[in-house]
Image 1 (spheres, rainbow, N blue to C red):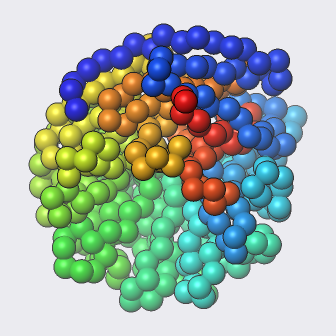
Image 2: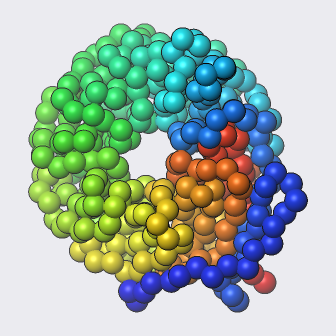
Length: 400
């Protein structure tokens, strides 16, 4: 791919309903991004910022949305399970006294107990980890934390199935299906990045990577330390590069790549608050690209070297959240989806950075999108939780 910078020029067609706007972009290579549904999960504030997750279970869509209210006149923090039309299947509300901005942390679908069925794991400002039956919302697991949980939990399957969770102040717990702690580990620093379970060192056994604001740790499934490094990680992702597992960590203005021994392979200053989520080989050169957002921009970095392959300005001097990657039009090629704080969802060509389409509501966005083929039609849909707690499902159609 050629290094390039694209400045978005948009033709805006404003819709009448819900303050939504449709953007047709990218000239002949553009397309459309339109809403399939908007959930009835609104809150009276505009600060919801924990993303949704989606899975297909028994051929049906399940979409878990953490929504919270911090209005002085109303407390309503709940994990809400939606179906494929955005209708509420069930909801679980935490205690009003604990309801806060981070009332429900990032959820995940996972089989934490090894019964072959997916559960939903999420932490709350009650300082608890919950495990829910994904279909019914029945509480199957509760576990006390030392503080509230912000980031997405994970699961290990060796030496047995266990849930993994980190609370905000960096206490990492391994929790058995009966709700007892197998071990705990203190990072000694704030943790907001998702936990990763990956064979990082290449010994055919998964390790647990934990990114904190002051250091990065790699643990065994038994909770012993493999290594720690003085690398800050507000965002932490992994991918295989040339057959080797590589960690990518970002904080401040810098993205770093680390090998399985914790050695820094490269570092790249990208701009303010680099956010990571998607890593994929978009151009077929057998090396993944690391897709990064910084204020106003989306970038693609060569995963081998950290070199910038393209940089696209989507909305100047505005927060842009971690890009995610999916095949939105089922053509076999990846698209990049980014969200910006002004309430816009952007679709970019993963190979070139060209803006293909966008969608806007007059409501702020504070988190990254989720891409999932939750309806089984062969193409990924885009799910976004807006600041007002509403989840919007979007479909992309390429230009004819």
